[in-house]
View: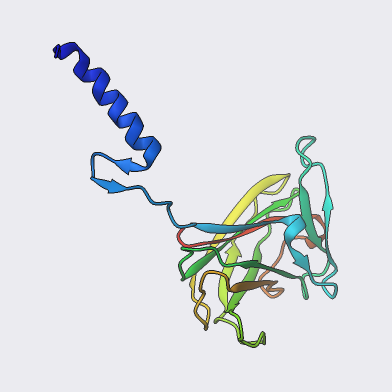
Length: 194
């Protein structure tokens, strides 16, 4: 056999192994990486009627038209969401919130997140993780996008694949100085790392 065919044979072998899910370099079968996060866009978030939170579609900076969640009461603004726990999602988790302040307002936004997991046969109740702070020291304002993350938090119950994961994030009125009427909540993410 001529040596000129060796590169072609290696390429065909590598392509075949990739299509079959086998890593020639490490001699093992590929596995899907575990999910690193769960994401809720504004239209997927439940708002608290006491804090007068509701989703709507809006134009930001004459550009995109995403859904946003706006709360008009900083003393009672509460956001919630839930999802089925996917295979491989690991705890502890980190809250990551994305917001945009429409006004030229660079005030602070403070809040606390909690979560819980419930599996088949378990009672859904008010047993949550300890509160974890998720704070913005100051916002960009004028349609600027801001993101902040919390420290890690572990629910009091195990989170197994197929369980329901519930989260709640409440505005801390004492530390919040930004105007709530022009603040857009865009998404909440629960991540395994930051």
